[in-house]
Image (cartoon, rainbow, N blue to C red):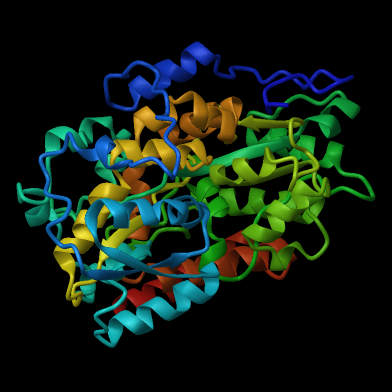
Length: 463
């Protein structure tokens, strides 16, 4: 059963202001591009020669035949979706691809060490610490590659098909690009429709309603809400969404800004939600704890990445498949919600010996035809044509796609980039989440915790 269908025997709670199919399609066009006709995924098989799909590009796909590139990244929906297609890339180009995909925590810890040593591999890698990578000289500038007609056919590649956030996200202030966005995600509210229906609860729209609903929905066997609270920067995504939606910033004028009144109010609400209605042991929760609780019906609501949708809607993994409501991120009364958004990006190692072959891989991996294929596996790509395809909506869930797009459109790219692209983003985020964790556990008030956290972050910025 699709997530937006009625649960047998129950009627899922209505979602005030929820997007219809028509408004979803309209929303794609509002992302800054003219909406094409609904794309239909080309139904080729692996046995079929797929080179013809790419033949319209004025690119010599075989110009680097015989080279080998190393592709590194986290075990992630993108790596899961692209891996089955790599043999097709090799057949098309003659370029072999060696993969090195690891658990996210291990990958994020090992990659900076590898790059700092000046290693020529990996050639292409998934990356998020954009500011650090640029300031350290780890990332190859890409504008010259985009301008090289032997490598790029911009008419065929069609950058106008990219979501507006994906076009804006990789741009450095001087207009240089150091990465290609490969996924799209925004913080989303997930709701167990059965838990809501059992208590005749409606989908919350404001943070005050979220708190009341979480407390009303919790039972001895089910928490009211689950969110990340571990004292480390990797857990910061949902909490930053609260800060932004309350009107605060993470970084402003090259200073940590989360000691301001808006951020303090946001973190105070975050702490109240988890201390009053969160699961036992929530202070140690990372994203996988949140997802597991929701899949196993251990929480009535969860807030995290929109990319959870493929697992939530998969009956083989999820006990709430077909019984989940995907909703817009809550807001402060009188304000618009501003959920955190991000694009995982793929970069080229500045020390790679195969930079041109690596760039050809990026062109292939982020092209329309490849994106349509990865979208059919449920990957939230960066392309309008893929988001509007029936195969993507079937795999990801039509209502989940609507909610994700709504949250992407409500997000503030500049506020997200201000922290993500800062050269010291990691110590800033670590300090922030140590403070959030203290509020969740009741160790300190939000005002004291955030003031101390900002002071630590600013000390790191000053050096």
